[in-house]
Amino acid sequence: MWKKLKFNSYVPTQRGEGAAPHEEWQRFVEGFDFFGLIEAWRDIVGEMLARESIPLRLKNRTLFILTRHPAFADNMKYMEKILLQKIAERFPVAAPMLDKIAFESNEVFFQEKARPFLKPKAPTLHPHSPEFKRLKAEAEKLFADVSDTGERERWVSLYIQSCQPNDPHTP
Image 1 (cartoon, rainbow, N blue to C red):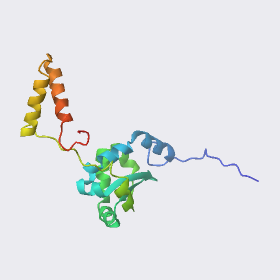
Image 2 (cartoon, rainbow, N blue to C red):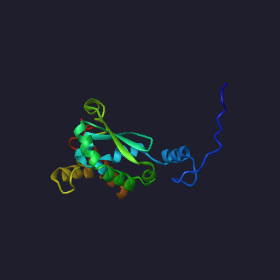
Image 3 (cartoon, rainbow, N blue to C red):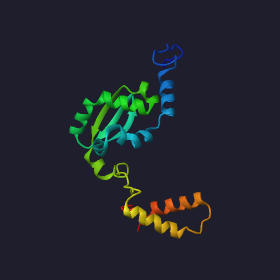
């Protein structure tokens, strides 16, 4: 009634070193950091497109990207080859395993769930700004009794970082 399937008649493909496609995919998945792609997305697509899109998933050699609006998906579709090239430069293990990019749109995701991933880079003080110099002077007075110069510099640096303006962690 039931026919037994035989899997030992596999013919190697030309994609890898004779490995089965699922073995090749497994090596790719083990060597590729998808969260690294999400974190590097701003550098790959630029600041404006990073606010409007985010990598969603990998499936069947296709990278799915979620966009805020279909208009962004249409514009990014024209950039598909450039995006694949930039991803391959940043993540060399991804080059042979990504053939195309597909897009999905969902405005609600960007309104509610994407905020932690899309927060802007924290502003930093310039070493020659008056605020930086003031904080450094305060820290040097505070840690003047630390005898090791390297240790004192680390404490001063930590003090300045903890007092950064517009930092959500400062009271």
